[in-house]
Length: 394
Image 1 (cartoon, rainbow, N blue to C red):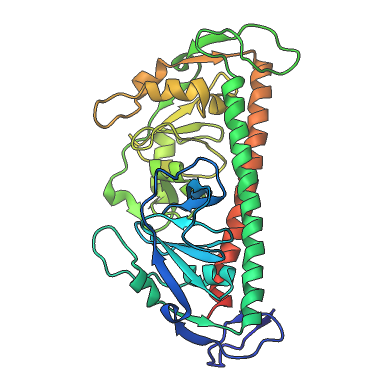
Image 2: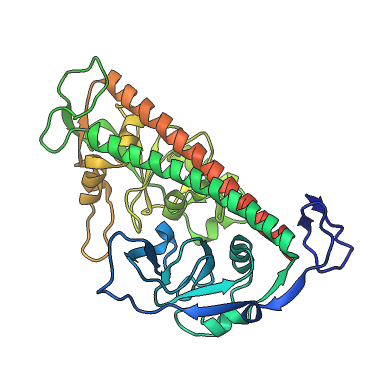
């Protein structure tokens, strides 16, 4: 690919394949295609399995809601575009299909993989108020730059391959998450059982039940006031940072080094290996504290420390299966439920021997590391695609 000099103000992309130098032409989508809106599903013809898919607004699982055996409304290749809610998302379709209400179908002579990405790269133009809606005339008003046919096909093929790679990594990630979910169900005893369905070789003893408050200390932070916040310094985490993984992203709140040192001296701060649990809003998300220095919001997070058990085991126990259920079932309140230290101390936890705890903890930590690695790869691919979209289209 060749990079174009920014100083040359031509209608060309910043990045393009070698051998192409012609300027791109801007045209209205309505002049280049036929755009139709989806209709209602004919329930008398609806099948769970068939030859011609029926696509709805959602893009998950290709948005398939059913099939027709011998009927379709749009002949492939074509592009569908979401017309309601999260509008403007295009997807190339390679099989004959029927679009459902609030899904637009774009039929043209242009390469569908190119057109999918050109529409996705276009600023969404909606005139409706309330729930966003994109109509066929509004989509038709999109002004899109088109290259010559051969360059268009090259770009379309490039993004098709990139999307395949992204889909493959997404599939691997989903599979790993499903495997973890299965292990969480089988590697801990069900209610009333003394042993799990699946365990490591060499372990046969019954597990014992103990209350969380008997094997760990639960606490919260000291109150930080609005006047204590500063523009930079020691990161200050809330439940949202733990829930969304914001602990690895852009930090919003800080307290001063002096304030942190004062709290550390008087009351102590979280240590590496402690566990933080979200206590309001999205309940029961966990994070095992690493070596970084930080402080956290009282009430939003509950700290589990001074554990007499393996911390990776305890982290895993509350991540899913029976442990997660017991954690969430302990939440108090009628309207806005919240986790409290009093209730959490009473949660019953199933414990094997120390050696088996270590085995289970290490197994799930390795699995989590693999999932995190695949997630990073997937995120990187999506960022790369975003960059290519910006640079390979005018």
